[in-house]
Image (cartoon, rainbow, N blue to C red; front, side, top):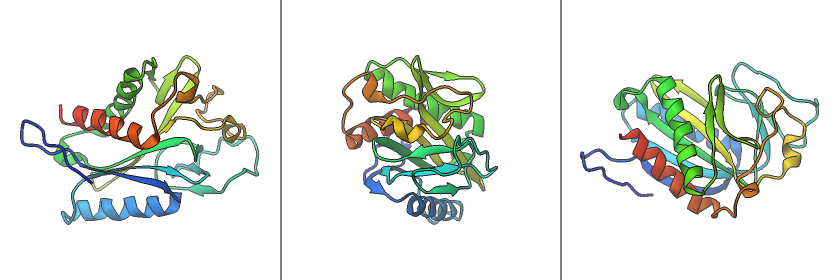
Length: 212
């Protein structure tokens, strides 16, 4: 874990790369950290990891499966968003952030998350963009990153999932963006860094934008 200090005296949130993690364990960890931040008993954190294969959906239970039976466990979570896949070859960025202290609205925060992902991809020579009304990050070949957050007592958690080298078969049983467009991975555009290296790059872009 480390902190990077801004010239203004503000600190970036701490960063941790956690390797491969079960989804439910990370979810519980985020909920607990959000509560302790709200109670002013802990500081902000940005966790990054990769998950064992799992399908998740948001708290409204939007179900965009093509098939009832999925090739990995299915979990209804407390985040926003529709059904998506998390698993090997996908980088998760999980900031647990005090929006009130940062003076960020929810829409402003989600745009910031998306833009930090775009910054990361741009640095690797991959053009990408935001699309109004469709959360996440998009390329000419399809959706490359999904977004879903939860805000409780002005603390945001959950975050984004960037497809780095995900096997396409995992997306075959769901509509990953809700409008019939395919998902794509960074490996279709370039030879990506390791997930740990990429996590540090993304963390730097996200933290810089949050402190601008």
